Image (cartoon, rainbow, N blue to C red):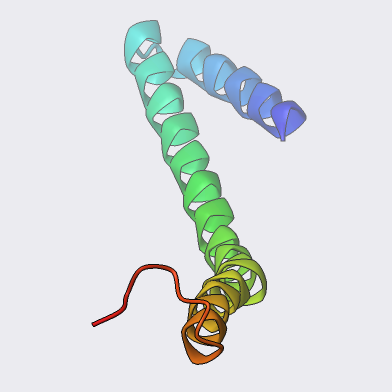
Length: 86
């Protein structure tokens, strides 16, 4: 949430001014916090993507492989063959 980040930055700058802290240290801490929050968001999105990918594999890829194997088996059983004769 960008507004929260701006408010936190304004608060940190104000408290740094009141306490006489170095501005670079305050900004470095803010940047580290923002990077940590962003990494957490990315991890959460990646965790939600896993089940979606599994659904695609289960509903699309597995049936297509089974249909291909079924077509090869049917071709062999009907003796039209596709070059696997002994």
